Every structure is written in C-alpha cells, then in structure tokens.
Amino acid sequence: SSHLRTSKSKIVVCRDLGPDVMPLLTKRDDIEVVTWTEDCVCDREWLLKNISGAVGIVIVFSELVNAELLDAAGPNLKVVSTMSVGYEHIHVSELAKRNVRLGYTPDVLTDAVADISVMLALMAGRNANETMGIVREGLWPKFIWAPFALCGPQLSTSGISPSRTVGFLGFGRISHATLARLIPFGVTDCIYSSNPNSAASPKKERDEALLKQYQPQLKSLRPVDRDTLARESDVLFILAPGGPSTRHLIDEDFLRKMKKHSVLVNAGRGTVVDSDALAKALREKWIWGAGIDVVEGEPNIWKDHPLVREPRCNILPHIGSASFETRLAMATLAVENCLAGIVGQNMPAELDV
Ligand code: DGY
Image (cartoon, rainbow, N blue to C red; front, side):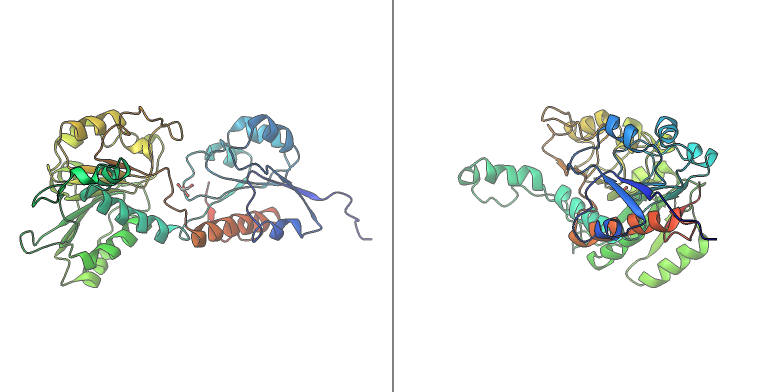
C-alpha cells in the first residue's frame, strides 16, 4: 500500500537566487518554494511567519539563525543552508540541539576573495582611494607630476627592497590562495598566526610542502605569535572568521607594533579589527594604509564613519565573493546542500554542528 503524499515539502529561500539557480527548486513538483523576492535583507516578521513548517531554509549572512527562528520553524526543519562560507550568524549549538543540519559554501569563493585581497593590498599601498579622489574631485590639473608625489610602498620586491614579508592572521584556504598569487610578486617570507583550535592551526607537514612548492622564491614560511606578526609583516592579510574568539584581535596595541610602511588588508570579518584603533593608526601614521572589504557594524557604515574619513583607508562594501562565477557557484551549492539535506543524503558541503 503506497502512501500518497498530500503535502509538498516547504523550502524558504531568503533571497532571489536568480534565473540559473531558482529553477533547481521551482521546477520540482515535490517542493513548495517560498521566496523573499526583494533584493534587501529579508524581513524578520515575514521570515518568522513563513518558516513555520519548513523542512529547509536557504539564507545569506544577514539572516540571524537563533532559537527564535528555529522554534518558529518547528520540528519539520531538517536543514539550514547558508550561501556563505562564514557562519557566525548561525547559533550552531541551537541547530545541534534540534538535529538540524548546516550547509555552507566553502572553496567556491576562495579564488574570488584571494583576488580581492591582492587588489586591496595594491590599492592600499599605492594610495588608490586618495589618488582616485583627486581625479574625481577635478583636482588633477593641480597635481603637476612631481618626482615623489603620491608615492607609496611597492607590493612587489624591487632592487632597493629585495625582501618582502607577508603576514596572515588566519591561515586557511583563502590565505593559501592569496599567498599563491603573491609569489610572482617576489614575496620572500611568509609568517602567519592562527587559532590553535581551528582547522587552520599550525601544521608542520603542510607548511613544509607549501615552502617546497614556492622555493626558491619563498625563503621561509612559519607560524609566529601575534607580536611577531605585527612587527614583521610588510603586508598583513586578515583572513580569519568572525565571532567572539577573533573579536578585536587587531587592536591599538597590535597596530602600534606594525611597521610605518606596512599595509593592513581585511577581507575576513570586520569584527576582527577595532575600527577606532585602525582609524587612529591611519590618522597618526603608525601604518601606511589599509584595504578593507569588511567593517564592524556593516552595512551601517556612513560617510562620517572614522574609517571612511581616512584617505588612506580603501574600503569596499563587502564584495569579496562578488564575481558572477563565484556567486553562481555559491547559490548553486547552497541549493544543492539544502536539497540533499532534506532527504537525508550527503550534502556537498556540510558543517559539523
Ligand atoms: C561569506 O561567504 O562568508 C562572505 O563573507 C559573504 O557572505
């Protein structure tokens, strides 16, 4: 005797994932898709109401997944699938309590974020914000080309500066991809500091393999304490996750130890950096410049934010993964995770909660 299904499984999708990805859901006749179609943060009241009875939910990093939301969903919920690699917007212990699985999107965005990390390093060293401002404001005619006007520290090694140390706070996939891109720039030394409890913790064999891969250009690669990271980095890349364990690791004390010509790049999470301390470091010229894709408190970053006011602060509005190729891959993976998870299959990218 076959059991006739009378109701479809409900999946709530918190953004329109576009014409290439939505059909993976909407063409299925066993699934009811409920979508927040506006291109803005999904309304909380709408979500709390519509999630009731859902088996899966596809979100982006602006949706807070906490007990309130999970209770509103009720016992049918099997999967939360986030279109992001970061997951600090998700209370994972609440998922664990309810046996809800978590899908995320690692790997597919690694290259896009590594690209933008290099871009930010170049922008910050060579004064992109400040100098493009000159053109935009119509001030170019006043800036007669002068031998040392508008100079900045070079990212690549040069005759007068034959060594370059790049530092990484967090040394996972995106840091590795960033390092790979910097080898042709002539980087000679790589140092990193990472959370000893994370997957990116120091690994002797991995480090030896990386060094071997990039020799003879790369002379050294080693884990260091944060003090050394601050003192020795010519360019510091912050590619660490957010959350309480990394909050304000970059503070006034750290920034004061950095080199005067050093550049700070943050394409990880805004919360890792104390914004007021960074603004002070730039204002008082403890470091040369900063290139940041993330800011604590985003997206509420207005014109009068202390970092926006600093000409040496090159700020992007969290576009690290924003390439056509990557966003398509992220959206596809998020949907595939959800579809696999709701029927108890292996998800292409599941995070153990
Ligand atoms: C991520 O995937 O975590 C990015 O920050 C964009 O959401």
